[in-house]
Image (cartoon, rainbow, N blue to C red; front, side, top):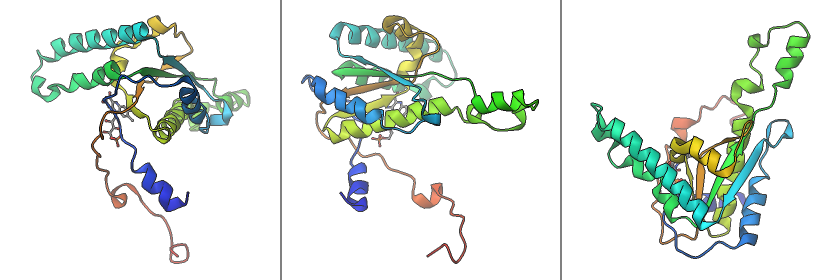
Length: 220
Ligand SMILES: Cc1cc2nc3c(=O)[nH]c(=O)nc-3n(C[C@H](O)[C@H](O)[C@H](O)COP(=O)(O)O)c2cc1C
């Protein structure tokens, strides 16, 4: 595919929140995960892991935990002065998961900041420099892997939705899946065969998000 063709194809990716009951074949899932781990990572440490929850009973436990925690949160927010701002928003925390045939829980772990340690061992103060930990390099690396997973899922004709909402039940999900330090979940991904076309969400135009730094020569 050419660059313009790939761009057009990337624009067809959507966050998909409704799925059919058709199971996702294991070999397809393996390719989706192989796609994820093509991502770049800080010092190539690949600080990611993925729990791939296919078992209906395990999925149901995750959905129940997220729905319960969301209900608790909603009850608190209902007492606030801005309850109407939240509205039905909490439904987006668990509904896509409830319909998904597969729930992927991406995780990341931190590593000691090598450069900061070298600065310290040379008698310097690491706080004087912005090193990898200043940009949460491992979390950024895991985010890159999540994006590659979404792209490969799209290429496979699957629907997927990256979700921060399930974080409300982080401790429950950690316990259910045996996720222990140093690992930490980074949201959840709902995955399955899509039902119907998801609506396209707009993007800010490029001139609002890009700041070109160039001179006459490099403008060509
Ligand atoms: C970090 C992150 C968290 C998100 N959390 C949720 C979520 O909890 N529930 C949900 O339905 N969608 C969630 N989304 C999906 C966004 O709503 C979606 O990407 C955005 O509206 C743009 O739509 P598009 O992906 O179809 O282009 C999340 C996306 C990202 C990247």
